[in-house]
Image 1 (cartoon, helix red, strand yellow):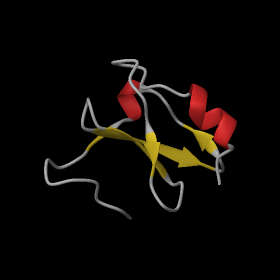
Image 2: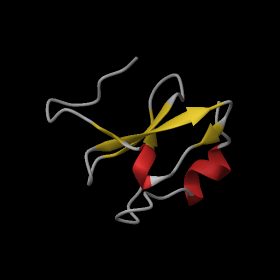
Image 3: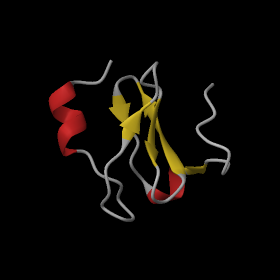
Image 4: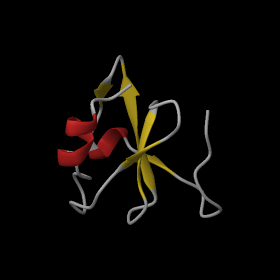
Length: 62
């Protein structure tokens, strides 16, 4: 699980908007950009090239 203090300061590297974790803290979602960023070993991979598009229907969870 990601540290709540870390979640407070993390922002999408593209739009600088807030990101929200999924229930398992495996992904961080940016609603403004409709992308998600992977969390690997409690380390967020916040690289625009590593982001995955999220379908318009909502957050899909793996």
